[in-house]
Image (cartoon, rainbow, N blue to C red):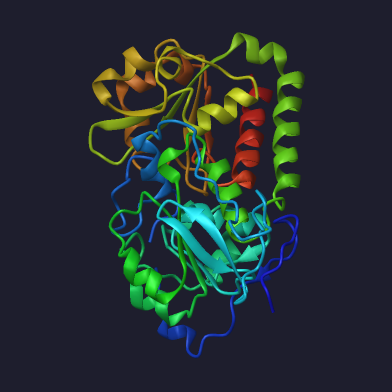
Length: 365
């Protein structure tokens, strides 16, 4: 049966997988959070934690509207004789199934978009379950992994074993063998590198590639309404509080400062956040030495930081927080350190959850 849309990830997920002859023969797993400093980790697939540290420049997008005759500018387009649609991708026009049934998401942005749509990929990359949102964890555990262990390179043979009819990734995955994947199934690489808000853009474009361009409209409205409600309900606190945004980082002696133009910065700004000097002077994100903790964070009234899904500071966060200079910050002394596992969002549900964590923080100020 064709892949079908469910309007909310809160509904029971429809599986886009069909039985594999021997699921156990498909070994496990690559990383899931792809926006921070580990961009090059994971061989064939940069993680969301890593990708956004590179700082995407510009918000121009590739159109993923179908090009079939009679399709106009819509993304569903006209079906070809073989039941295909043509979509524009980072690699040029690609014919994809009109109704894909076995979609392998080799990056966590399309994976998250599919989960938000109520769909289950046939296979995914494994970044480690500590980075998977709790709401998606049960489904994620049941999906075959296509990387060489946690954070490893994507394995062509593992993808092949799943018999995909569509593969979706992003253009920042520069070390994958595009030709090998394309020989297995139509392969779409989304234009991540041209986006400043990949959690939004990659989600919209994944929905377009799947032929359901309007399917995320309800989530978009929830996001917009939630941000507006926070601005209204917490106007006084927002006006008197300046925020810095950070992640613990992966390299000894360094942490990551996130700016107002980063994905999480944009989300908090939508909710009315004002930024302290460190985040206000930085567009996207930057690796910073422990020696500069005081100079970068001294005037922050509060800090919003990245956690794993168990609520603990992610990556080398504990080491950063243990630094004497960090302990002496005004925000630390005042107990105004607020964590979120949605700090590096991959889709609309993540962004909405990040707004929820931000509102909880505002409620304690």
